[in-house]
Every structure is written in C-alpha cells, then in structure tokens.
Length: 67
Image 1 (cartoon, helix red, strand yellow):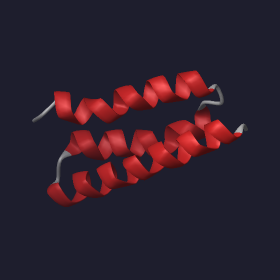
Image 2 (cartoon, one colour):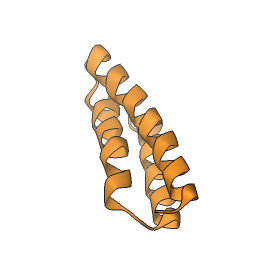
Image 3 (cartoon, helix red, strand yellow):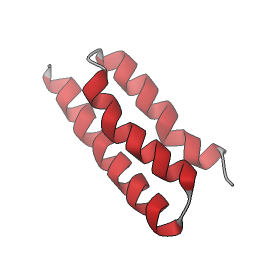
C-alpha cells in the first residue's frame, strides 16, 4: 500500500463514518449504505485511481438520490 492510498483510505473512511452515523440517526438508508460502502471499499481496492473514482461516486450518491 502506498502513502497516497493510505491517505485516501483515511479520508474516505472518515467521510463514510460520518455518512453512516447520519444515516442511522436519521433513519435514511441511502447515506447509511453509502457510508458503509465507503468504509469497506478501501479494503477491497488497491489501485489508487480506482479507489478515488469509486469513493467519489459513492460520496456524491446521497446528494443525488434523496428519498
């Protein structure tokens, strides 16, 4: 794991934790699921570009899909 992958993992994992807490407290499934995916995804992807692209899409999804 490179330093950039580690930094991006921490950034997106923190964002995912915030989304997950918000989604659980507000009982909103979209932010909760996106937050969980943002926490888990850095463990699965080792390519930095794929990690940033996938996590950026997941970070925007709660703003696009509103129940």
